[in-house]
Image (cartoon, rainbow, N blue to C red; front, top):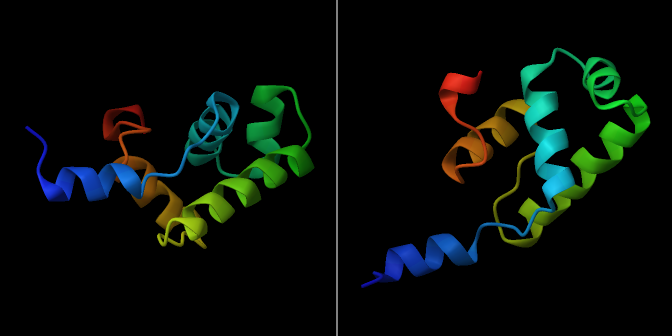
Length: 86
């Protein structure tokens, strides 16, 4: 049986696409957007576009993530990345 906290937590997790999750994970494990782009075979601008959209989705659910560190925290909280993968 779900608790109210479980329902609220699920409601505040933004609906990221599989590609957005892939880009986010890769970027979090790289030093730069350029490095992430090389691994994903896209430009740094494309990585930046995905990250901007991800930030917008977090903002829309009331969980702003304006820095790389805050996006890492959100990804860990939401189970999108495992600390052992870092």
